[in-house]
Every structure is written in C-alpha cells, then in structure tokens.
Image (cartoon, rainbow, N blue to C red; front, side):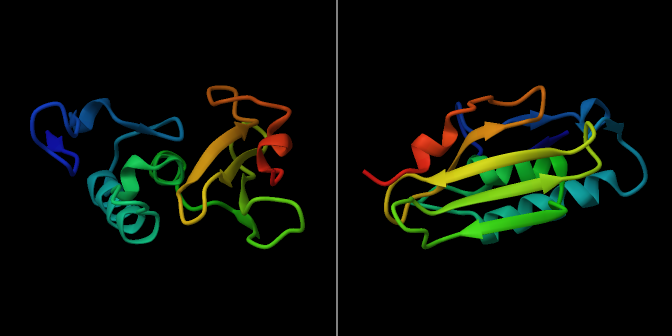
Length: 131
C-alpha cells in the first residue's frame, strides 16, 4: 500500500497497488514507479494556490491517463480566460479534456471532456469566456 501525498486524518488516499488501473491496464512491471513518477511530475508542474499538483484537475487527469498526445495552450485569447485542451488519441478512439483558468493565477479546472467517464459540458466555451 502507498499513501498519496498530503497524509493525515482525512487527507490523502491509501492505495493498494493491485487494485489500481491506468487507462484500462492492470498493474504490471514498473507500474508503481510510473505512478510515483507521475505524482512527482504533477506536484512539480501543476501545483496552484497552495494546492499540491495531484489535487488539481490537470494533475488527476495526468496521473490517470499519462502524458497527453497533444496539448493546445491558449493563455492570451481575446475575450477568453486562459484555457488548455489535452488530447489522448489512443483512448476510446480519441478523447479531449478541456481546462479553464477561471481566476487570475488560479488552477486550471476541468470543464469538459469527451471521455465517457468524465465531466461532459458541451457549453464549456461559455465558461472560458471572459466576463
């Protein structure tokens, strides 16, 4: 078993390695090392507003599905909040995850995905529109 970062009462999650599944694949050789590498990466790259990277939406998606095949970054669109679109071409015939930075300096929040087990919001572009 392994405790995700942020341990303590009510914090973190205990994980039994045999029960984990990444992208439909059961644990195999190197699974634990890959998982820990992903947690380390997201904590270094997606931490926001005193929140560990694994607790953010982008961190969770990265840990679950790995490195996106393609990323569209839109940090400075006219009349739009910053947003990112992540593409995974080999999952379910191709899926995308749409993240919007709703507050200045805040984390990017998942607002839509075409993955069948994730949040669906066809009007997500309205959430990206600057008010």
